[in-house]
Image (cartoon, rainbow, N blue to C red; front, side, top):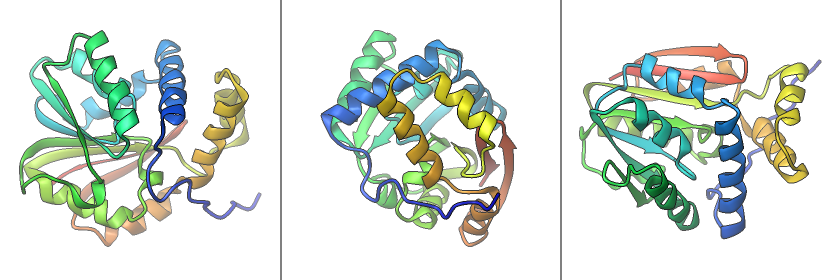
Length: 221
């Protein structure tokens, strides 16, 4: 079956109170069903386990907060474009009792409000397909990472098989969330497309790995 052309989901981030509530409910359901566990493992396997770590696009914060629970020697700075999403993330950090180890900042990953070589690690989950200029974000990741710092980028793949898509849709409760999931799939990249982006970037040491529900890019500076 011919792969459909990529359809960008957004060029300006997912903003608004309703979207923030929607993503909070969806990610909470995924967490409760154990679907965030592999994301935490991918980040840890990328040797991002301590120090000052940047999370790009934390949304409601669940991936980063679950990761912090398992890494006591780490802190997170979450860079989020949506003020409504940031508000939800701060509330969730308090529910996790991790507000002293995480700081959420409003900003755009295309032009990160940080000095050079400041982070020990950088990770993101399900935000690559939302970056209007992925190459700029990849170069920003390289800029803010310390020497030998590690990164991990996790996202969906547009070429997921039908069984996987149906499985995920069956574990999403409401119709709007199912539609949102499919929009994200259609906006995501294939491994070959990600390789092309990385080959043009300032990041040189990386590994692209496919897994059942998506793709992982990990490496070091």
